[in-house]
Image (tube, rainbow, N blue to C red):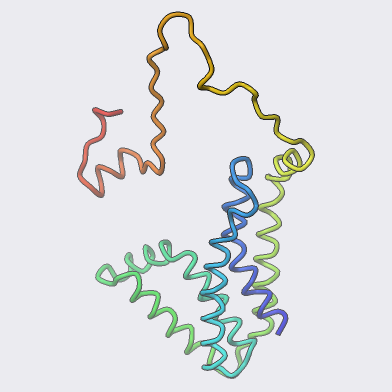
Amino acid sequence: IIFPLLALVLVCLYPCAFQYFRNAEEALPGDMLPMLGLFGAIGVVILLLGIVIFRSVPKAGLFASIAMVAVVNGGLVGALLKRVFPWMRDRYGLIALAVILLMLIRKKNVPALELCQVLAVLFGVLTIVQIIPAAPTLWKQIAFHKVSSSIAPETVEFQGEKPNVYYFLVDEYGGSENLQRYYDFDNHEFL
């Protein structure tokens, strides 16, 4: 029971840890909890469904772990499926992969427990590898407290007129190439 559950937890944890540790300077550890909760909930539902189907925790854990890899990487899996089957929608492709996975795991000679151990080690190592580049940033956050400025921006006085400065922060901007490709919108005049 331990390795199938550990594999599922680590598969669900890895994408959240990846995003958090890549953005450790701007993010707080609690920022990854909503997505971890969502991935965990989806994983538990798939695990329970697998237990009902397989009547074996290792096989259900293997099914749930591999299914969560596909769910978390749904865009990539969908793009790969569209190359092979251009007419297929992403959700139908994921359902087809789930059915194929069910048929493969249902075989009696599948070493489910060993595969769960491999997945647990693999995703555990991947998660730890994400910590290494973020370690200096995390250490600074723990060891040194940020000193907040005592100057409020509203109280700054200017000599003469205030400067005419505009700062555009284009959040989640996909780039001019994506705007042109997907929306047929030329953004060069703005840039």
